[in-house]
Image (cartoon, rainbow, N blue to C red; front, side):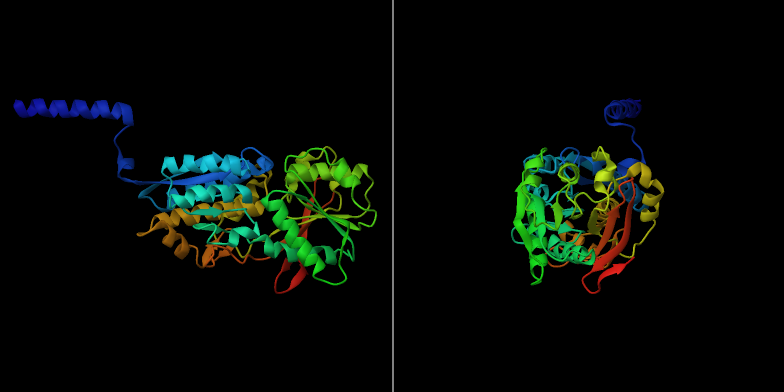
Length: 386
């Protein structure tokens, strides 16, 4: 009878605990792995945030299907595309107990987040930050990225413009944040490296990331400007296109990966403003797995810049697979990210956390909702037809 009494008490205790913690089942035997995800839910890249989130969440689904002894969870926070937002968000991820972080998208956000995360010993893999300064592993320890530095996109941009027939004076309009300034410098250096290419009289003009009125910036461009390069995000690119159209600018318009993709049309009240605009965007390599096909099947609904949906997936997958290995997570990220066959192509992290990339797609807007990537650029071969 005494034994029966204790058994009844034990069962009652289990019932009470279960009422607060959920049913006791096989899930309790799994190892939970929390992966942080820094997404620009607000700020200039907000139009792309849903696509980035879709890519990371698809990775979580695949990780849980592949590693049945684990329960992978994505802890998503807003990076704001801004260091002031990303720093506190990184602390939230630290407090949440994440093993590593996918993100951020914007370079300034990654820089601020890395200061917090690296101090806590937590690695991060950015899916879209391209500022050349992030290649400094001493300044930004435990930082990886699955996209190439803008130090490479600079020569790609110069080759893109030369291939389009631009032969002389170029105006560069750029945000003064880490991404905008870094890319503008890389493009200017690559463009003027050739003795025949020059910047026009106004050279580079910078503007604050949150600028909404671009009439003055465009009006200040010299009459000698043959073409313009926008080192911008989506919203400000749309504003610049409007101002250039109102000023009857007849030169050619180019940009980097910031505004690349059909999402630009969502920010232009007149799609014809984008007619003929040509951009560069990181090119996916030879892909592995079926995720690219899954994206293509859902592209209209998911939207966003395809390359960065693929890289958000890859960064999350690398972290998840690294977390299943014995040993330190940073060492495991390095080993997992060596010869990794990803949805965005083959990935091998260099000693500083960079990747070489597979080159850049060269894509043009038709001004009617269309966006065609008919050419590409690589370091080895220059501009080629796709």
